[in-house]
Length: 496
Image 1 (cartoon, rainbow, N blue to C red):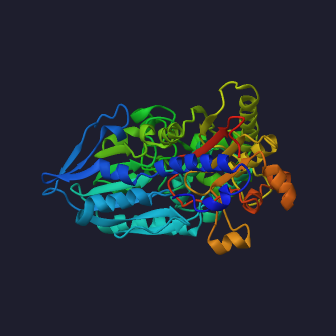
Image 2 (cartoon, one colour):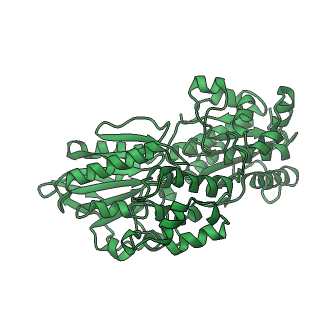
């Protein structure tokens, strides 16, 4: 089970509805696990290592098909990477490669479990990088330099959501504090999207923007991405998007530039908020410091695979679970970059309309929303996250609606920066919530327990509020394939 506190989440309020929603959510969380996909991609047959499967290939890949690496000509095999939950891919590589694997190093988010044997790990900070991220990057660089890679060697890289924070090695002349300030001001205080943020931080790093791939030459490379490599991750579809429109998959070519970074800072009214060393670096960057571009990348011996294709991902798993329950499931939208509280209000309004008028769908039914919402925290630094704010905002709208249950969670298990928010949770080892679950009784329960949900939203201190209401979802950590919102609207007679 990915959900760790199931009992306390489903033993109050709309009990039957909560049980159903949590079963549906659990199915989606389990689908966001790339371990078995990795074993499907890689195999050893007839004296060769085979890497390939059409399900994981980018559309338009000029190297499409299974890559064959004869064992008698294959040198050493290494694994390097960074991202939330990517140890599940690394675990699959360890199992598939066995004694062929020489070693490697990956950077995970604090709290990710240690499940690896031959690949070493550093745990770092996300969404704001810390000194452990820098330490992990230095270990990777040191291992690459000491290996003195040759053309017969093979390197697997693994990147996914969270890599832009975890893979942090400030460019020469820049301090970690200046780099941290970029993320804190732009993403947390101003609510900038990851794309806008990466226009800047890709230009102030030694490994981002495909620079890590430069270090791996002249080895053969297989770049594994813990996402669907075709839709929704770059500006274009498939291989073209990965090589021409990418800003965050840092093993691949990058479309940023110092000019675009400076422009983005001015558009966000943040240029004057940056430290002078960041400003000077951007103004004085040389061509040699630029990110990796497509022509340089295509001259290397590289393959790309997306380990979480949509047909094997969250949405099909959720819909299958709903079908088994006899509940029609409707995908409403991908809530990319919508402000969480407003999205919660809007979603609750749709649910209330269905409950009252069977429009635009007939009850009973389930609504599914994916994507990645945002929160503009400003100066208020309470412990919480976008999925928690979505739920509390929705709860305020569905008060006394005894047929509606809404849950929202991040598949990586950490909704927002995290941090200990109460002693009870700390004793249990809960450093962050994944999201929350609410129903028509939540506001009544909050009033009875003296929990001020409006104040929690205002101060962004949503974790303690939901935990105190036994409505904060605690899950194991995994890769991030964005958020899952499950909305159940029951029949008038189905509530317990």
